[in-house]
Length: 188
Image (cartoon, rainbow, N blue to C red; front, side, top):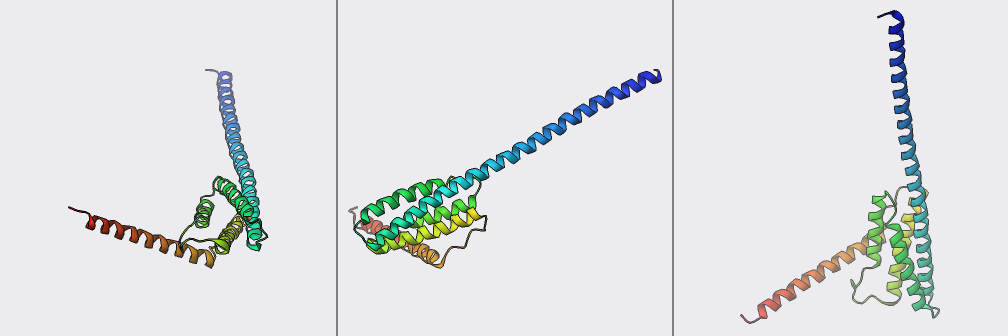
């Protein structure tokens, strides 16, 4: 093989390797850009959904404050609150890639909906309860939207959660006792 042929073969190999590396580099760059663009879309979507949920919670808070003032529109205010909290819950729990936020918000919405731990919770106590949970959720979402760490649960929230859990345990124990009494009283 002559030197010219060897040089041509080496040149051809160089061109093939160069082209392959160029194609690989372009693919790698495109892949990185696609990931970055996807992440940016998720962040924009998360911000938009978070703002929607926050706005709904603010509407709920305002409606609850109207209900506490008792200006005659309490039932309308509470209906508006239920609707706003439902929309906020749906929005907050669909935020992308934020499991810690989902868990915190799910706890807040569960506490918001807690019923019966002090009997039939009605009137201003119930509205105050809902207002406090709404304020808790606003603080959590606002921190998320600012990019701050999620705040620790408030002392009111922790105490209220404990009361609900204790009431649930008491109800479960009563149900078991009633079931045992019913089985014991049943004819054999």
